[in-house]
Length: 480
Picture 1 (spheres, rainbow, N blue to C red):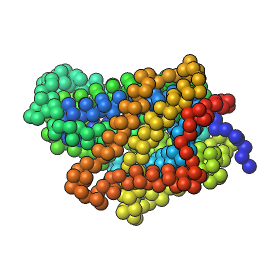
Picture 2 (cartoon, rainbow, N blue to C red):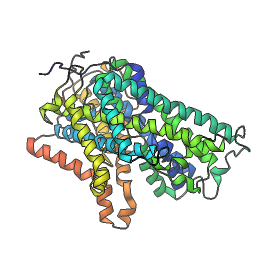
Picture 3 (cartoon, rainbow, N blue to C red):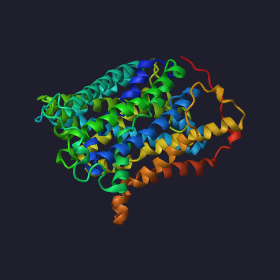
Picture 4 (cartoon, rainbow, N blue to C red):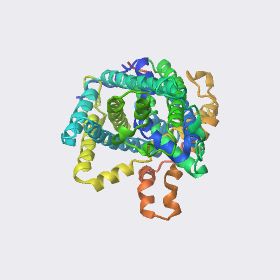
């Protein structure tokens, strides 16, 4: 018997703020940022991250406006179905659940790679299994345990980046680590821009993957104690986080390490010894840099897995509540946790993880299939917000009814839409140039899978795009 009708709104402002702060800080910044500099040079990498950072800021303000108006667990999947077309909501929900369920498996696999730095003799499945059990227990106990865990894991990442920026700037000016290098690496050989527009576009893709996860703020709004206060505060921090963490970090790395260095080519957790962060700390004279950064990356991967478990569980719960998934996944236990959805997501994560050991081809297929799903979710946010605002105007509702208003509408969602489409198209331009159809199929697999979900629902239920005057703008009572 279902003992609770609603998820518990227990997340505090500090939880949402730190989830927003730590949502996109991970191996994308700590390791892969080096490959971006190597590919497009320091100027190209900065331009790409500034461009994607601007897009993400607009997307988060769009999501923030909708999430404060209608704070629901399904977030942008619900908005897509309510403001655009039920078929879009269905496809968005399953697309996002699939993305995070697969990402969960990737993250628990990555834990074993990180742990091998210290304990190379222990079988990899041991560490991954322990990580999956820990993540399951954190999410199974209460939403507050998820929020508190995410708060402290994110805080470790934030503190690390701040220390890195201080140490890096001191090293640039010669206060630490020997002579001052200044900005000489910015104009070294072909720098600051290497390879022109095609390479910058390819780095847009890398930057886009680095920022995946920022949309979690919309999912957590459904369990926020005070969404109308917490969400805007967290959203406002996004811009400064992007500016401080990504742009300044890349600036420091580009100043201290020439773009031609082979040490910048690492892209995953297994490359921690050549992480740009590790190299900069070493240059400053910190001998234990690799071990410290390995510990930080371990917290990052656990944080990503924790967030992935939460996001996919809540999305499966929301799909069930809207009749788009089996009813069992829409049930809550006495602690307000969608436990069946949690178990279902864990089983998929476990299956995918086992595939990484016993069936590498299937595992590679699943990871490739989830590749662009995050960008598709961002597209959905941009489209939903544009339609939401137009519906408000069509139905004669004042913008004063919005507790939080996204700036520069309609520029924000339109710019986000265009950049998302460019990033999706630019995912693998090289394969198009060489007409390598197998590589194209792998790179863009997410797109046809999303379209199959969309048209399956559309044909089965004969849905149409909702006319603006029929869009449901009613606000349910917030129950705590």
